[in-house]
Image (cartoon, rainbow, N blue to C red; front, side):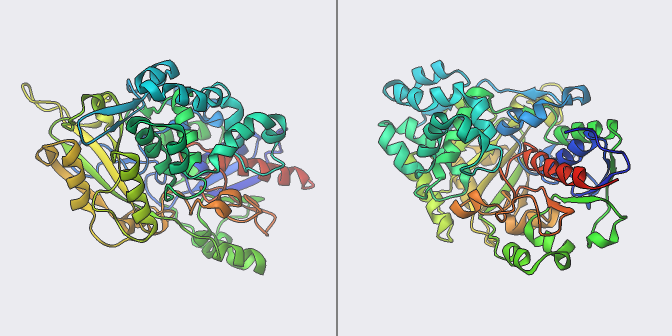
Length: 489
């Protein structure tokens, strides 16, 4: 995109990774950009805070960023010049079982195949071609996916090889391809990131994407916490002349100084409140019909020692999927989809301080190093009941003595998550349900454009959805640049 006149201006609402990415794309094109953030600390869900005890640094939102390291936009930026360092644990993730065994996701496909034994060839047949062509596939999955998408007609056979199994329920794909409990459980844990019941169509797509990015790019995390991603994006934006205004809540777009375009890193509910009167009736109705998805119930821990996993392999990974067999994980996600929480919920665990000592204070000589951990499970939207006992009971099954390690805990219920970030409506951390309709048309068939020609949506409620990758903002900003290029000087 050719550089535009610096007389063109843009306002960006929200300083999450998508808002900052949109601002950077605009600033790169010569647009004068102002970013407005309601909170004192920028980043939205990509913040690192002292949620428990002084010196213990916890990621408010996601802690591990497979799509961040694999994001083509982030890779195009000199973020390392601003202190961003990615840390890769020896294994991308671990998945323990109640018998004390575990399986890991390895960066090396050959190591993965060897580890899975008789299921190794089936794993290679599924993930080998996809991993080899990750660059082409990510071009499709990180943009709106329609029959007219450029990656589909450029790579039709490759897209079919990915797309056909991606349409399946995760349980169907796992049972048809794998015979052993380890391979099936590993795939189930990957697919459970979908927040869908594992017997729902499209749930396999998340297992495919997260598995292939694990082999292609790993599942790293930033040294010092997720705030490092935000800080690097902010620093680069400022180097391009962009301005960030924190503690500046925007209630109505018309209250802002005039700008040629406005990009909103918000969900449909907030967008209606900001500018509903500027939209057509049809578009307002489309936003009102947008459905939010299940929620996260999250607990941050300050620990006196590492988590005492029964399976030693769990100490090789910053990410652990706690759930056991395919059937156990599927039962947990099925309960969520039926407005319940399983007695033994599937847990996602992050333990970055095993590989990043900066995340917890160092005690005096002769004391064990302290740690942080981050655990959440999936619950129905806006869930109000306490899930902490079920979470810690499940942890004790796989890490006996876990409770004895706890110095302090911070419980983030769905309501509290939303209070700390208005985009997390009802505790939904993905910006909306990811069923078939909203997988393809998110939040409406307009994607990033609204019925107001100068207002664009750039949040995780647009393609490709949740995750710290910046691609929602990147994609929306290019639509905004095309609109700016159409204006007369």
